[in-house]
Image (cartoon, rainbow, N blue to C red; front, top):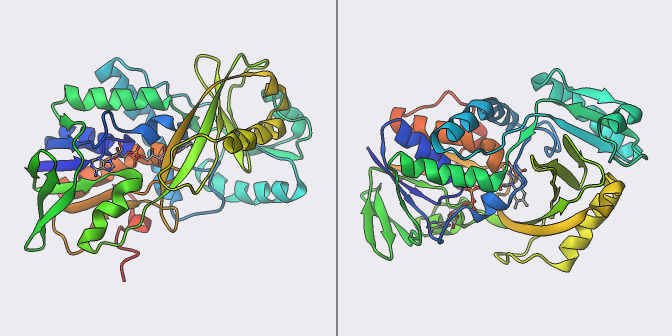
Length: 367
Ligand SMILES: Cc1cc2nc3c(=O)[nH]c(=O)nc-3n(C[C@H](O)[C@H](O)[C@H](O)COP(=O)(O)OP(=O)(O)OC[C@H]3O[C@@H](n4cnc5c(N)ncnc54)[C@H](O)[C@@H]3O)c2cc1C
């Protein structure tokens, strides 16, 4: 079985690695010089709950993917010598208004269906855990199961792993079009010629929708720009993810922290504007005002692949034998990478998966 995977972001690289470990011949096509720019630019939270506004049909897969993280990152580290810095110290989510506190309390009910150790904590306890937090906290919850990785390291490790395992990774090789014969995928047109395969996986992030459109497949992906600031010289260290509506802080192993993130409709424009900095500073002043004395060390920008319902496309495309989608992971691509990879490999190699991917049917927006 020879599989062509399009896009070497966290999703495509994770799928290529999984397929190769399970014996498939894999070609990974990446249009840019390196690949995974958005994935590397992201905050790296492995957080089923803290950015999820409401009880969602996506939660079972979020939760299963989180369960895979410890072993997935350990194996990656062992195989490549690159430590993705997996940490699982949990998230402190705060409310600064009564309305947010009500929402927090309602959220706790569905979060505890998955993580029974999640609990409400009072303002005093929250500030004992994290002295950087705003003293005007109205309410807080602690979600111990959530974790995070260092995304630039994760992407480097995945790229190293696929190469060590014998995946043919071609950078600077965009898929220009998908080649169909008699209703089945035959391969991919690249600037260097046609590549043939028994199956093709479109894992092209925010660019996936445009690649599929000429086949009449309506699986829209819209770029949502996100800017993150890297903070150093923290006057008070942080140990957990700290989050509130509109923003978050993620600690790093080296004592720095990431402050995120904007959500901007700016097409494929990947600039960090002064307005983005202003929005992030506003978040910081409300979430952890003492960190306003930290140093801004730089920023990263990524284009999240959003979809109309903010859920990804994971599965086989109807009407085209051999075509699979793994795109549109919006706000949760880092979290969902191990589960997406396993589900896709199950579908391609065995024809079925027991992972709960029903909400992510790639054909759901087709008329
Ligand atoms: C600021 C920010 C913070 C985030 N924080 C988190 C977080 O904390 N937790 C979380 O789970 N998620 C987070 N995300 C979301 C996460 O980063 C994305 O969901 C994830 O990176 C998507 O991965 P991907 O592989 O689908 O896309 P990408 O990383 O964009 O990779 C797609 C690849 O496909 C390539 N490509 C495109 N077209 C073609 C073509 N025609 N041929 C060949 N290659 C092609 C691109 O060059 C790119 O390398 C965040 C995103 C941003 C921007």
